[in-house]
Length: 330
Ligand SMILES: Cc1cc2nc3c(=O)[nH]c(=O)nc-3n(C[C@H](O)[C@H](O)[C@H](O)COP(=O)(O)OP(=O)(O)OC[C@H]3O[C@@H](n4cnc5c(N)ncnc54)[C@H](O)[C@@H]3O)c2cc1C
Image (cartoon, rainbow, N blue to C red; front, side):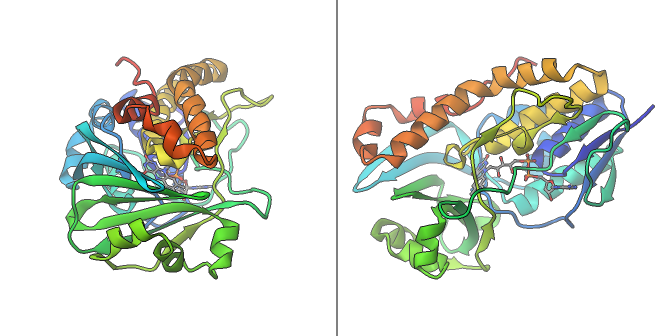
């Protein structure tokens, strides 16, 4: 039986591998980077990931990595704050730990992991494209992502600080560490010589939040970040796109990994069963499109000066729920 080829070993690629293996198909997974590795990400896992890990048969692997519980959410909008409880809680786990644990689990179940940068080959059997988001964007007003881990007292909240054109998230991960991750326009970063510390110090509320913490690693920067979706297949598409390679939701929603796991699992099943690409993509659109529409709307609101007033009347729990993908049954 021809193996399912999977390009990319992030959450989407490993979910696809685990799903295809449980359908009885052999899997060959190509990953260009040596794991474990750090990755720019808020590392906030939406509560629904536990159900997805259970369906993939790796909930024990996830729990063994000791993700931090995240029970409270706080939005800092200019001078105002919006707080609510997360029930069930979210979880915080570094990509260093998560991606490595999932890749090892896929290998332990029989996936052949090949350390290679790969492009899809025509006529080579089913291919899942899980290689992450596109990196190209016009110079000038590009958004860059950044992240570092900090030591010091950690708590159980995810806090998001919004300021012109930027947001920064602060939340716990495993082993008492705190992750600080954000997005900022090129122009803001360039004005401060790409010093992330200076950008963060310029915001009093953020400066106060980070005061008791000590940075334990260099800042990581990531290439331009732009929301993107490809639910309509380009002519001649033969791959099952999953995760960010299919659709990249604005990261402030903290739901990109959940979407990647869901579409990765669906892609692995579809590739193993020989489902048509259009049928597969229709299923993905049903799961993701509400979340994408709302995230795009909120991004527009956040970009306007009306943010604090516009968001004040929306209950936090509703805001949170509406920016998650729909969990398909079974
Ligand atoms: C600033 C920022 C903050 C974020 N915060 C959060 C958050 O808090 N919570 C959340 O849920 N989501 C968050 N996200 C989104 C989340 O990071 C992504 O949705 C998630 O990583 C998508 O997983 P993926 O497997 O599709 O892609 P990736 O995680 O990008 O994995 C793709 C993999 O493919 C490999 N690869 C690429 N090309 C090739 C090739 N040609 N051959 C072989 N291998 C290849 C790469 O090395 C990589 O390991 C954030 C994103 C950004 C930018």
